[in-house]
Length: 155
Image (cartoon, rainbow, N blue to C red; front, top):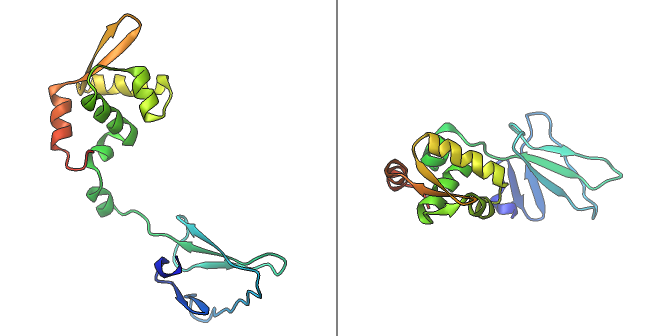
């Protein structure tokens, strides 16, 4: 695990080296207390050591933030619709005629949330829905199917 940390932290047994701003050199003696490593999305720049002699030392370190170019390389459909809505459209495409309750169960969301997502997809003409007794059954439209087949990262 230590080998895969940010470049600001290096494991050279038996020493864990951490880059600090110039002149802020620091040495922490663990004396058998262990070290808790905490990745931080909010951290910027160098790692930060929190040391209280009564507690085990803690080292927080920044993790890489997702940049615009990384987001563009990711799933374009998710970027456009949102992760859950893209998942709902994908499920409807793979199981035409599925109900709102089935969508909710499969996506791990409430029925009301699944209904709202289906409503938005219907408004965008990506799905068509038909009421059958007390069920609302969903089918992809040609536009919805075309969007899914042209998106390179849809599962």
